Length: 65
Image (cartoon, rainbow, N blue to C red; front, side, top):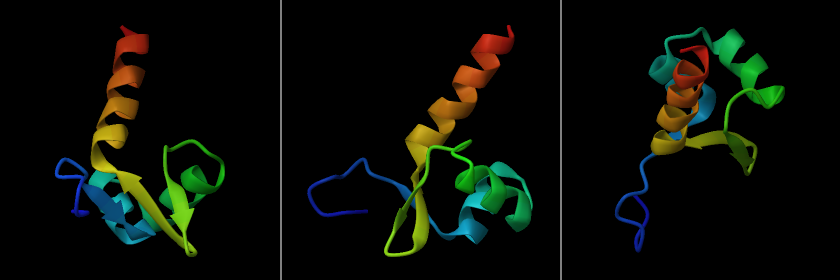
């Protein structure tokens, strides 16, 4: 966690993001590069805030209902 941001829980790297969403590294890379996931690159490395990822998928579930 970052100092001064106690609730910030980051997932770093495509491998970690892929594991968190249950997809392959290749699928995850594609989704990130197309903007289909709420991640961004920091010094060439992908990162996603876990709460934004959860919210992203929760919104998809609500839209399908």
